[in-house]
Length: 417
Figure 1 (cartoon, rainbow, N blue to C red):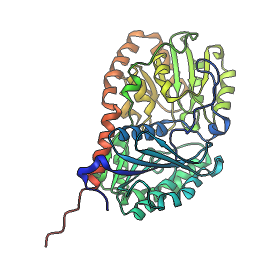
Figure 2 (tube, rainbow, N blue to C red; figure 1 turned 180 degrees about the vertical axis):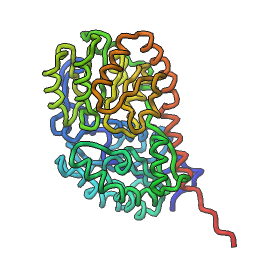
Figure 3 (cartoon, helix red, strand yellow; figure 1 turned 30 degrees about the vertical axis):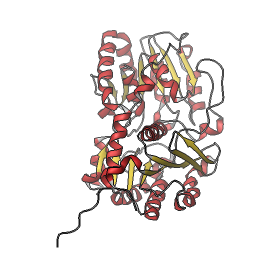
Figure 4 (cartoon, rainbow, N blue to C red; figure 1 turned 30 degrees about the horizontal axis):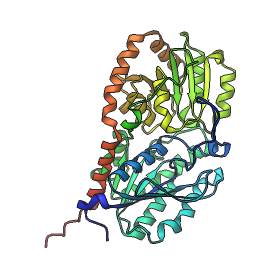
């Protein structure tokens, strides 16, 4: 039987997520920021906001005394189980083949159905990205363990997902119905923005079951970012930090940078399936000599990267929230981002950054020219960004997640005769 809500610190949470922090560090690539992920891992798009979210939340809840079993895909790394923190354990399943990545959930079925060796499961917490299989696995797990289901929606395939690929169009067209069905049956649904909360309410999810808890940043990680890690790059520095994937549209940023009237430097930090395409665009850019492709860096190095920049850009085609925006603001960086999805709830246009239409190369170039040419504007937006970031500290947000667990475990009052 599930524990009572007043024993939340002793809960056992079964966390299901299609992606999690990589099992092993990337191969070394020399000094500074040089180096890339193993090419197999890059095809899996392995590092991004959802991975950092699930890993940081797991660490925060571990420090609060919760027991956690994380079941996730192996991506290109090894399968098997390994401890993380004091009371958490990560179990990776599936095949290391990109086109079969969603089969991790099929391989995870016997894992989630067998009795836990660390005690009864009290809450199943699923993290849904662009992977409907996670929701189906979570419903099965909750039924097997007789406990409540909590779902965090990192990307609503029915309301947020867009894209040019066949995969994106199919997921958006066919994934909405199973997503709505699973979310309507969950005891609690966590969303990152108010926009998604309204969309899910229109889809029939009871508003009283929806909680808005955004992604955040770890204050301890950002307390002392360290020295400049880009000493050879001229200022002002415009930066992109994230996955090189179709959704993120780093190609739009490279083209916009090539059209800028003001002189600046561009730093692209990240890896992913679009790496070779972006590299070709950089090579053909009229400003190629001022563009640095730094490759992948571990998330622990992101604060140092951000503190070495002057502007952070997120030119996504679609985005539930954009957690790197919060980290940039925590670093006191003004941001330029697409006016799409939940981004306007994070970036206040003219107060913490500038918003531009998604995919509009000229508008992005104009916004970057404006910031580069106007240092007082950069300083004002940076101050606003730093102040706004305080609301996104992870220890507080993890406490909000624990409150959701408490709420779903509250006993249901018996009907009055």
